Image (cartoon, rainbow, N blue to C red; front, side, top):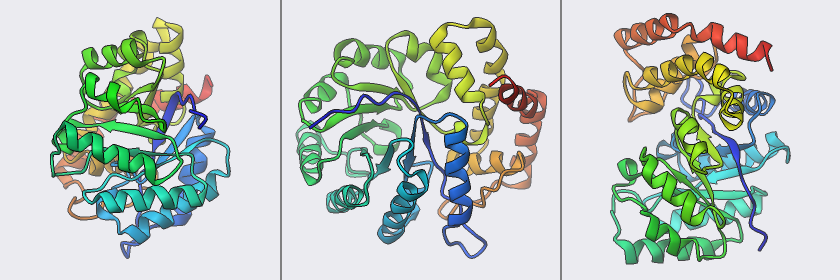
Length: 305
């Protein structure tokens, strides 16, 4: 199997819902276009930011198919297949292959907290379910277990494992992954706020949450970090970090939609168990965005593209 060399900005898309709580595919298509136009090197559908945990299997399959249709081969599309049930993850992997997607992204089974032997067994099963390349997803906070460097090294022996998204927030871990496995795996971080240090130690990309709401800001910032353009980094970094500060005013994935709606972008509301930000939380978001001139930074990044 040809192992892809994914790199750059892979934007993990929100799932917009209409007023009846159904997936708003018209808005979603516009978001796919916006992400590609603003420089995304890849798209991820049904990721954590896309609220996969609140979608039915049928909704996830439909969303994956529509993402492939809307992107139309312009950039790689990776399917989020994380689930508690291994059978569900494998079914989604097979579905993604049939639908023409380019890869899958998966955490260890949620909540179960498998040990090393069980984690290896799970990923062996997942990799055998389809011929698609796999991006491992290390998110100890979400999955309850972590993928340390030695375990990732063992998983990298599986023929379809092509990349890892590391959301540990640990730059030492990212550095070790890049140093020991960078010739075998594409190492991504899970937060745009880690782009600068991550690229400096050998990571090649970011699975991006803020790219979809910030115009060309993340594209320009990523390229500046890659080129060590300190002036551009210093100019854009305050706005990027402010966006992340907004996410932290409540549940992250509700926060992303709160920021988008505040910036005048149609994102809809989160699906339960998450709830829309309260009036007080929205006021804090508005203050953070205003105090850090985020709208102006987004506009300026677009003008300099």
